[in-house]
Image (tube, rainbow over the protein chains, first blue to last red):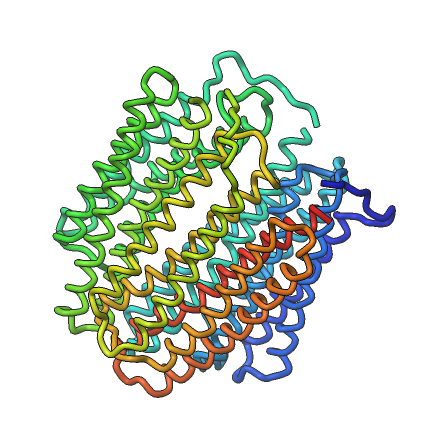
Length: 208
Length: 208
Length: 208
């Protein structure tokens, strides 16, 4: 195997920040979509484009990782970080696509609440990722990770409450099938944010 | 990156045994809960505490792994073992929490049967993990792993029978939605035990 | 840890090709089964045997990997390739088993369509895996991977269309529960094929 050096201006940190920004954009787009009365085509297309661009950045990171010898931190952490950041955007796209296929639309108060917690969590993820390039900001990075963990716990409680309510009040089994899956997916976004925080924390521990 | 040595009394084997013990405790607690007519708060709290303590041990293992150079076996196997052992306890907590949210309670003969197979499997996992520290006990470890595999196959058959029966006899689609997920989760516990056995077997092969 | 050399005639490529062939056999068997009006026992047994033989090859690869020092490409890629190829066959077996448990049979036009896309994708996977042993065929390997990616996208659209139609036309919630899971599983086979293609592409990049 021949290892090569990447171009001088190549920077893993820049690409991770780009990925985090796409996750923030996807979270904002998700928030817009669940607040509307209809799933308009323009917002759906916007989400699709964000997901697509996020994919491209993830592929660039993984290809570059395979071609280089010198990396700013452990190869497995770079791989995991690129993968998990991409999963946030993918999952948000999956939910929106599912809403379209299942014809679940109309502003849904539970999804609006989820979207606002997701938006906070993805922003904390973005702060954590941005701080990685500067060892002096490790305290900020840690705090952002703690915030992501807190929001994941909050999301668990929200999902439990929302599902309990769904089973109590919704009498149509088909509506239960659809909404149960979408609510569980929304909580999964927060799980993936927590996975990112775990990778970031493991990078910090190794650098300490 | 600076690698450091862990305190002299630090021992990965002790922590893995602790994790395995939490999995055994969680399996016992699960068995109690599914045999009762109501999900009492005391048992739910007990399960929650077990899960929490298990989490703490898993984090200690992963943090220590990131900080040390000297490990008793391959780093990726330590990582996988800590992760999978934690997943057993997590999954048992998830099932119990789901039963509470879905208001599924009352002693359920299928869950009682699952809980007894899970209890056997988790005890075999614990024997396998305990044997790891002594190369002379590799035969016992292997036998415990074979037992875990046997119980996973048994669990597959149980899940198939139980789901076939559910679709035959239950007429309420909402009850099907709830119980189907809980039965599939119960079988997943046995899958995770098998994943632990695979990691243990891979450690044995490398030591042979 | 003692590393040993494998027997001279041991060849990872031979085993990967065997795994790919089992995946092709499983896809063919799946196609047969979904075209029939009943799930006959002979075909079910055939699928079960393919899955079992595939498992054996996967175990041989992973055990050999743990025992040897010299590998034709990165250890983690060998591990991932063996795992993902095995997952294709497993998933096809899972679907057929689920159809039996749920008593879903009778030639289903949607599953017939899925089975034909799966058949194409698994054959492209097999071409990619076969090309790996000869660096001069890297262009063919790349083309096969692109084809797998194309078929995964096609599968996403198929699944969305089929689920939208299911929710539109099927009035029985229990039938929706069963078919929804089976259609989603069918698409998952194509996702796993894409995962194999990603591993293969990452091997190519490192060899370039």
